[in-house]
Amino acid sequence: MSTENNQRNGIFHEIQLSQNILTSLQNNVQFKILGFLYNYNEMSLSELSIKLKVSKGTILNHIKKMIELNLVQMREERVKGPKKSNIYSIKEDFEYNTLTWLNHEDLDVFDDSNIFECLDKLLEIDNKILDVGKKFFIYLQNLVKNSQKELYNLSKKRAHDKEDAKEIFVEGRPLHYMFFLNEEEKNIYLELAEQFKNDLLTRLYEKRKKTQQKTSKNDELKKGKNYIGWNILMPYKKMLETD
Image 1 (spheres, rainbow, N blue to C red):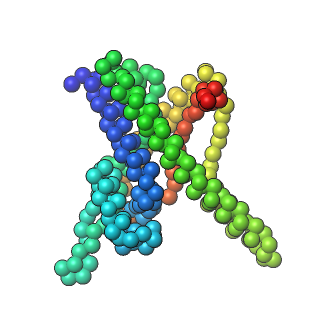
Image 2: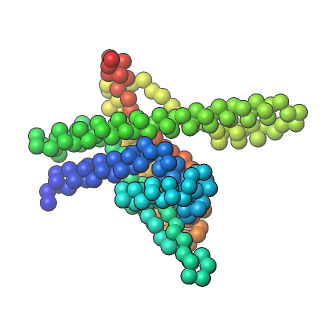
Image 3: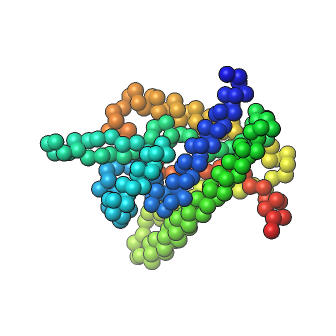
């Protein structure tokens, strides 16, 4: 198989992964299931039901769909005697896959027969990720507002600790930066963002291999994924010109 075919198949594979996770994240229950599984690594049906305040039957229906999408995996764990409990987690080969980040030259591997199929799927992903982004920012805004309340209440106490205030501030806000870029600066941004993504994925992969060699499964389960890193470049001018 040619290099171009491999690259093309790789892009379509990444597109499918992106569609799967975004389809799941668009659903409110599955959105929370993924979040809790990322944070706690493994959970039973009962634990998910308690956390989400949703019936086991409803969660099981959603879990089945997420297994079909290759997002979630299941293993059996013996509880008492012959009784077994199903334990759910994020699929290992899914965890470090990123959503689609393609530059102009990445699309050169497609020809007239498949370029439109690819572009249509990519725009479908864009629509879904923006829809999911609204949810993230609603949760994030609620968190920031809650942190403001906590800081206000802390400031009213006669004896308040500066370290407590700093902890509330750091734990209850997003880290962010924003740049307004011209065309040349955009290309620099894209180059560095691509380099960052590749370096990050390499380091995460290497860290996982070392962790699997040095620690037990129980040790690894203590390390939940408590943060989301999200890089997005927006076509600001086009946005303003769109009705």
